[in-house]
Amino acid sequence: MLSRRSVLATAAAGAAVSATAAAAASFGNPDEPPQGAINAKNPASVTDPGPQDPAISNQLQSAFSPPATDVGSMRQIWSSFNTSPRRIQDGGWAREVTQRSFPISTTIAGVNMRLTAGGIRELHWHQAAEWAYMTYGNCRVTVLDPSGRPYVADVKEGDLWYFPAGYPHSLQGLGPDGCEFVICFDNGAASEFNTLLVTDWLAHTPPAVLGKNFGVPEETFANIPLHNLWIFQGKLPGDLEAVRKAMTGNAALPPEPFTFSLASAPYVTNTKAGSLQVADSNSFKVSTTVAGALATIKPGGMREMHWHPNADEWQYYIKGKARMGVFNTGPNVLTMDFNPGDIGYVPRNFGHYVENIGDTDLQFFAVFRTPQYQEVSLSDWLAHSPPQMVAEHLNVDPAMVPHWPGSDVFIMPG
Ligand code: MN
Ligand code: MN
Image 1 (cartoon, protein in one colour):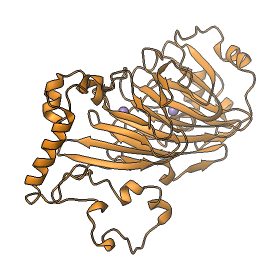
Image 2: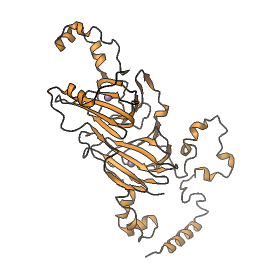
Image 3: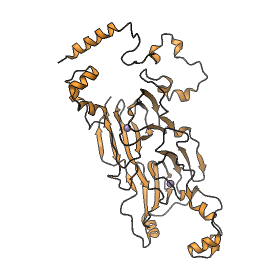
Image 4: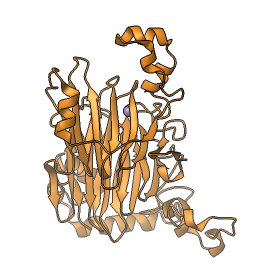
């Protein structure tokens, strides 16, 4: 068996022999021609005389000065709500990042919405399923299933809701200061600005038809709004139980809740390096098209190198500073930095890792358009391959291979 010392000695001898043939390709800088700031002998090679916007480039240092291991021309994996225009109404606002502005994001469209205390996102439905994560405050949700079973619940920071496609629903901010949340549609082309609205339909139906439909005189609807409401300021709703009673009548209740607490879901891992929590259709039964995961990573920690065999990953960065590297065939490798409000996207089976590069906790959630969360760990795979074979691939000591982190690690400490 080769000792680590003899492996290193052999590698050093090999490097000396080929030093003239491949002057620059090296550990950490493999490409010909070499790239990255470490190649720059002339200091002017890395300066940017401008024009430039330091407020942006300082936030995205991996774009300004990529690692020398980056290569190729992968589609952009970074986007942000911070650069999306807000549509502001009395009662709240929303902004969105869809496939239109973020082409790689084919499976998920993201919406960031704020509702004031009493602010209402009007009664509506749409073609895509809606999964949402509460980032702030308190919100009341209502929904009706196709068997006519109504549901109402109040949600808070860390909670989820899921409405299957076509299920009609409403959202309303509660006290003391309304709410903010992120919606993920299970279709990258879906838009929050193009939903089926109850006010649009009524205003565009002949009054006589409205009267006949509801079994009342058509004058009942003489004062309906002629333009849609979308988001509007309402009154603070009453006590949840009283509202449930008033809206349920004789109807049955749905068998499974449309809301779930991701923040209090069981831990997949919880160590001093960080934690991971998952909610998919195993635990959040109604969420049949979207699986969600909440990752908290301590300073210096890293979500290990892995990939997802069954779905693309759409990420929303809640707090802290992250650096993600994404790998595909080609090779193509792109490293980008992420700050609160930013969005990341990793196509199915593309390898990736996420590092906490700040000095506070990093937290993000990830959604996958699949009923079941799945991942493959690079380290676990290699640790459970023939050690001698792995050693022959990587010129490492075969004795160490079985000790590499296994399937239960997820997050490595700094
Ligand atoms: Mn909706
Ligand atoms: Mn991942």
